[in-house]
Length: 128
Image (cartoon, rainbow, N blue to C red; front, side, top):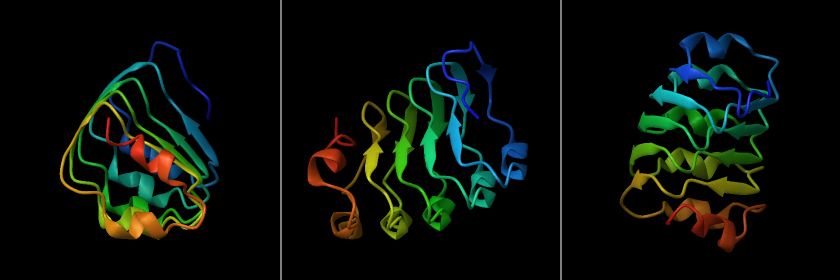
């Protein structure tokens, strides 16, 4: 589902979790607000998630670590506030993690440094 720069506003509905065959979700560069729905945990085939450049707030759902096929996660330029969940360390296919320009606090979970596909410069993008 590629809906970048389409002028979407409001929140991402919980019903997004019903799209179980979804491999790509790109709703970047819109005016979406509110939390990232916890129902994303049902998107077990998801490989690409881009939520960047919106007004999303709240935490990253802890269940993100269950999305074992995720290779790319971007949620930069939002208002996400929390420490990174340890469950991100379960994303063994993750190649790129972009979480910069949010209100993320605390330390990066140590298990992220051991993800086989993720390189250090890409992890550091979440510190800006």
